Image (tube, rainbow, N blue to C red; front, top):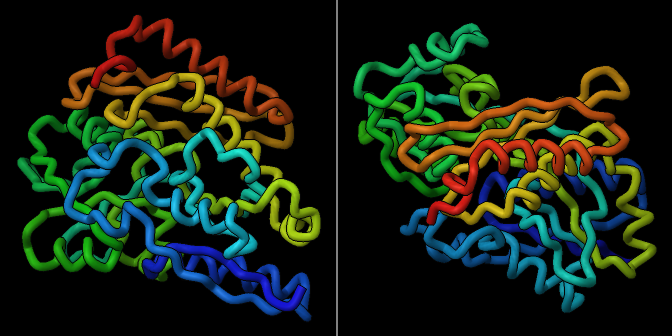
Length: 316
């Protein structure tokens, strides 16, 4: 192989993620040459609409997957949370890289001091003043925060991390909610006011993990990528993705899922579904065998479906 072509979006976060993968591959294969190929996706082009208006998952990956299928790139680096649960024929998730903190973080305007973490739901949200204006592009975050704090004014916000921080600091918002891992990857963890416990704001499936996609018949590339596959991260993400797939919820339903490895052999999965206004949240936790993560995801999804009785999951 003369050169490994690595497909990625062009945001600062996406480039940092791709660079992380390239650095690890080059450390494993000192003679490897790699080049980033920036691909603009529909999610990048349409930046003024809420994510749920873009037609479901895939708006940040479809064009990159097409480039992979067409042989224009050799691998694609994605945020695992952006990948639909159905992968196109001819492609495979070759590796789930070591996962960073999967939680969501509250960032306050002009505050660069972390508040000591808490597992108490009411304490976690005390950082937000009464009637605070909170920016987020996520229905999932919107619904779960409103469930605990109906006084909050949730305001739509999209854009890369730098743009969101700028809008926050300019005074249009009192706080924003973003993925903790995104701030860590960009060296901005000092902006985190508090990391939200997963039973306060259950993260998106795959949040904090990187997924490397490759062509399923490209054995040389698959062998090259295999050492980056993290057993713990893959078990957690596979459980979360199995749950999302089984729920069959559309993009208009707020859904979160977060699995954590307990010891060597047990996996704990927490999932939540909510009404869009936050008035109803169903959150459940289940444990299973770490070697069978998809079974755990399916089982917990079936439990949520039974409790929901067709109310939240069919909302449109």
